[in-house]
View (tube, rainbow, N blue to C red):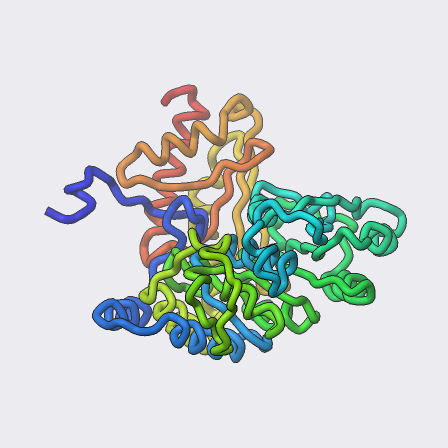
Length: 393
């Protein structure tokens, strides 16, 4: 009996993409081998983080890097570093800083449920409307002595409202002109692969990436590509700060017993897998992958083309992002709920995951589809949609 069978869980064909709730991605054999090797030994974490930082810096062009258990943890640690600097008393006070700049400025269009990662560090949010006649001017006016940093969402997901939001480089300039750092969420910014270096090249002070999505590392991995000036604070606040000499080798005599990042423990196996995945990501054929994803989505699109009442829109960008197939409902399907259809697909055999999104649509992505699975998804989706159009199911 396999582990899934013993647990009573049926696996899912993921036809949406590297979503955390569906396990992100499946690490390659090389990544699994690196994790397995590391699982059999013990190493000083400061040395392992230093090695990971070198790989991250080389891959991204950043001055430094630090491995975390996902991009959200990287964001929280980066914001905490912007607030506390190297002051051990402020570190100890987080997430309730007093007497120090602790406001984070961001565009209203960049607010999402993920900004809990900012607030978790103790930052207060100050919103700027990118729809203002002069959004950069409005941003500049919002930055005062109470501000610790500026946040920018670089995920660029097609269902996010980015209208009027200035580009990252312009935001970095405004923030730096006022002496403030910029923390960037790049968790879903890959692909295109060029963003791994392009976001850092804007001069942003810390960019958070997921290791378990496009890069193909362990699901519970991520990292910040950051300024060297932020690295010490990030490391000290991460774990065991009372005894942690951190990456510089200099002990912090008044460090807090535990930093705000103590709950963000990342295993040595996750770090090893992340390092292997980053090395592999640099040599993968990203355009060939993207073309394969598009072809697999076309298989699904053709299979449902004849379903009455189904609208289809293929999103294929010219900037290297992953393609998506968006499906909506009208006519015979006008009363159908995308969430209900998604649940029907999950209840089927085999189980299929297609994400319901706002606006009562289904999103299909092919990044996680294996060979032959597009045809399985196409057949299952066509059947569920046809039953719904006929009033059955």
